Length: 336
Image 1: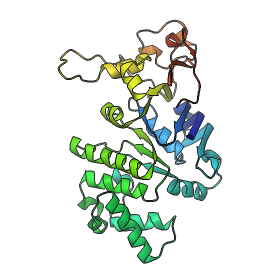
Image 2: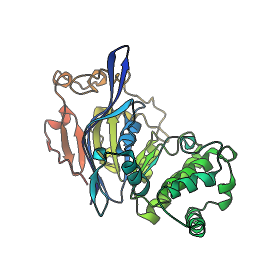
Image 3: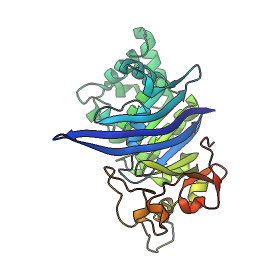
Image 4: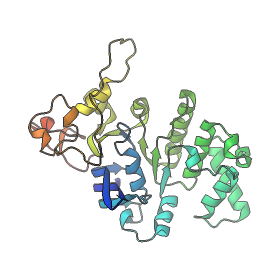
């Protein structure tokens, strides 16, 4: 069952500098469907719109970031709603806390450096649950025990914890209300490989115990390969390829995805790895047609002016590329 259906989503950074309106088209026409109880990965170069996409999906689009159009429909079991159509911030906050959880980049984006960890838990739980003191203590203790975290961390200030432990606390805080959907924005960033492993294992454990659905944004393709069910590749504000992780890694069809896969190290292979030529375009004025065509060695005349539509190249594997679409059937939007 689909838990999230995104259609033609657009979110721009809009600024007014000396009377001139500037629009950075960070998310510009994104479509995908998220199935319940899966881990959906999003990969791409820095600046391609991954973090902006998660902020918009969680209803955290605040100026200069603006929701410009499209639909973000959540199926929350007892009801369906378009988060973008909720009128008040209090309504969006209720949904974010109880049904949708957002794990931002960096634990210090969540934790107040001058307040103990216990205050963060009390404020968050108290905003959504009316619990008596004894019930609150037991509620928090059970959650920490389930995640293998010691109760003593509640007495600590953020600076007294290591980076990996702060990230674990952030994840524990974000999942204490058992949300149906977790939006994780590079949860393992700035951690060494041992701490990364611990954080990713914690997320997998939470998904197993709570039956969550997770959207995972990370630059680490090894994480995508190991824990994700499906993977979307973003470039210049759009998704250019989507499919099961095995299909993307073994049979990448979009030229940009092929460059990403070709740049990955292979054990025993000492040959020179080739990355995509040039640099990502400015999203103030993205290229017409296919946005990758200025860097694409396979680009033809049509690529500069015809916008590619998604085509299905195999079951559940779709790609937005004119050369891929010449011999394939049109893709279904709802891909499981």
